[in-house]
Image 1 (tube, rainbow, N blue to C red):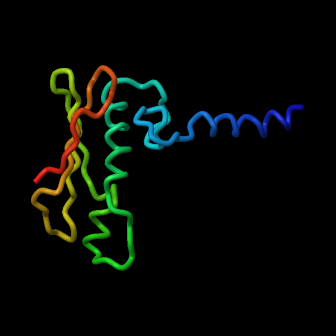
Image 2: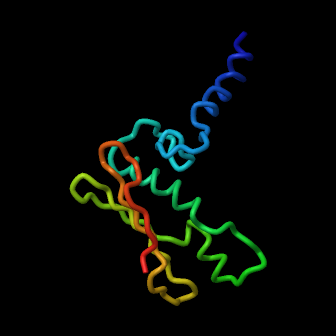
Length: 123
C-alpha cells in the first residue's frame, strides 16, 4: 500500500501544477508554482506567460542576434505598482557589448483580478 502511495503522490503534484491551455492565472502558469500568490509575483507570472508566447520560436537558421532576441532569458524584467495596476517591463539585454534601442515589451496588469489590461511593444 505504501509503495502505491509513493507513486501516486508525485502524479498528484504534477497534475496540480500542470499548465492548462488558455489560462492567464498564476497557478496555471509554468512560470510559478504558487497557485494563489498575490501581488507582484502573480502579475509577473501573468505577463511572463504572454511574453513567452509573443516571442518568435527559436530557430537555428537565423542570425545569432535574432536567436538572442527570441530567448526570454535575454530580457531584463522590471515590475512596479502604478495605482491599481502592476507595470511589467521587459528590456532586451546588451548583445555582445551592443545595446538595443526599443524592442522591449510593457504590460499593464490589473491588480485586483490580475488580467492583462494592456500589452505593447515599446518603440
